[in-house]
Image (tube, rainbow, N blue to C red):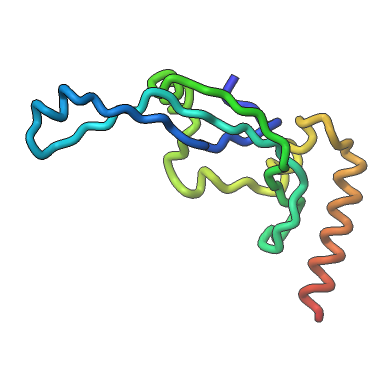
Length: 128
């Protein structure tokens, strides 16, 4: 399933092929067809972004899995995930907390302790 909060998908690379017959038919135009794409799926962890003003920041971990898809299959699966506007990409502190809780790696108490540490660090940074 593509939509999950336990990982974040990044496009890694695509293999391409050039159809020589089609290139010969069109004098100065070349066509490239992408046959497959490989996707790396990274785990989500608590981050350390200084730009996160409230709540806990999210980051990509170093663990990942790779999958290979036919380009058309990938586009059909991926299409619903595209954001219509930049604001759709923003996650407030409650949404980030829910994502971290849904991973099953952190308890609510642990997240509250991490949040207190981040609050102290933000306070210290703003007063020094």
